Image (cartoon, rainbow, N blue to C red; front, side, top):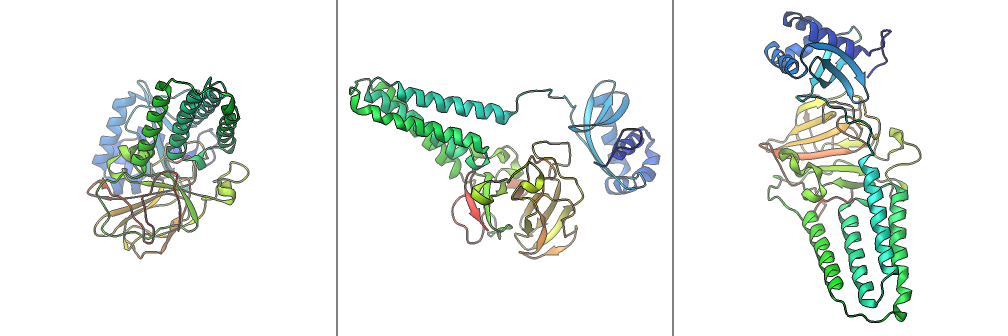
Length: 391
């Protein structure tokens, strides 16, 4: 989003206002590229659907969640790009009413509080156990907790203080073993059985999530598109991959780079503090570019303004499937629609555009709208959340 105009609104908001209040015959003048790409009939359908959601048009304003189109009956989010002369060059309007979420505790903070409380409760249980059977039952419960957290929770994605707190909780709990010689044997086996069942269930959950296979493989393995060490933050079965609910993305990977000491970031919260940001992305296969976008602004880390979900991207048609690489850095994409590329050819750089809260590469392959299990040359085993891979 560019700097606001003298009236206080960015040029994108002003251009979108002109477009939505103009008659259809004026659209080719206000947005010639959009009109040529989409067609007047389709644009009319989009504008009419928007009017049905918001009522009589009111204003277009810029807010933390993106451009907000307001009317007498509701609001929707939008995204737009403009040329220096004010021409509307790109447009996307959300297909649902916009409802501000208001202020609430971030999900990551709630998750962190829950982890710390459970770790502290497990440690307290071991330190207050009245006999060795109860202590062993508590240890089994503690082990089940850490199996699930470590196996499904992508530890490298968690803030360092949280990781330290959880690890300290484990150490504190294990330190209670010094009490064992002075404790009676105990006879209550119910708690021990419950702990054993929880541990077994945790192991099954992690194994199922990590070894999940959809039996829809690629025609041939891809070349890994990145260099160095990369951490899988989304990948595997539904329990460890939030893409699983979207058919074409069900086997997608989200990859972040690991820098010094195995961390994702250095000092600060700027984009350049992330080890992934600006890393070169190469083509994972031979193919033809069927879609490419560049020039969509990076998101600020931790925030998501409404944008095209893939952001800057390159989609490749191999003749057998479509391979999609997304969230690239603006200004880095080196190919255009219609180009033919070879495996290993530079495509762009890792960025934070689109539906992204931190710099990472999104990668998936699909055939007939169904996501395919990914495989890479020279890389064995399943690709699941928490695994570190090297390109």
